[in-house]
Amino acid sequence: MTAYDVFNGDADGICALHQLRLHDPLPYAQLVTGVKRDIRLLEKIKSVKNAHITVVDISMDRNREPLLTLLAQGNSIVYIDHHFSGDIPKDSGLKAHIDPAPQTCSSMIVDTLLAGAHRKWAIVGAFGDNLDETALRAAQTMGLSQEETEQLRETGVLLNYNGYGATMEDLFFPPDELFRHVHAFADPLEFHASSPMLQTLRRGYRDDMNRAGMAVPVQDGNWGRIFELPNVSWARRVAGVFANTLAREKPDLAHALIIANTDGSLRVSVRAPLNRRQGADKLCRRFPTGGGRAAAAGINHLPAELKEEFINAFSRQFST
Image (tube, rainbow, N blue to C red):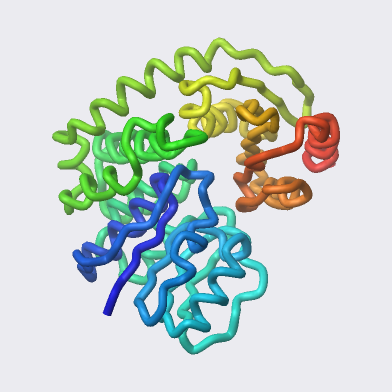
């Protein structure tokens, strides 16, 4: 049977799929992915019939129409995700494992499904998704040293860093290429020690974060902070990990990061307070092209004329 692996191009998507394929290899599966914000991935294969499709770490709600089409065309679909899903279709061809709890991610859902068979990679995915507490608890179950845990954390952050950008040209590596490279390593500690791709990402991350660290908030209140970065490649690459870093700096505050798109619209990343991981998805879904999860969400193309409306909504969402 023809097979497709459809996955988000960030750390969580890569690590979740990697665990699945270490457990159940499908070397003939065609990879379907994109930059992190390219989440309507099922549109790319909606003409497929009678295939086995695995979908990892992309919103079912944002892919509902092509999902229903694919089910009607005789495909069997395994769907694993932690974003807002809306109503899950009742179809014998669909096996859905959806958990939107704010302290989990797709990699940890797969870890549960596989009874911890490749848990170190789940820890990498959780660190990449800014779920440090979840990752640390999982690391403790394995008796990992502080040094080993830190190596998994850096791996997750750097894999996640590679996923951000407006287009593939912003990224250091296409996510499918990075996945194939990752998939050659059963042990993420070996990957951390020897991967030339990770070395490239480490250098890029350091340079981009140094630039981002010079930014000052354009809004700064006791409820949250809003930053704006220029519409350049380094800013688009660093958006997600910079937003995560800001959230870790002040865990009682919400954060938003705004970058202009080339068409004049705005790309927005939102982080709920780490000490109260709720509301980011509800806020972003109020606006066109918005979505995500309770702790972290975004808007791909916010019309520029709605910028003030977004700022006011951000304040209302997190000041109560």
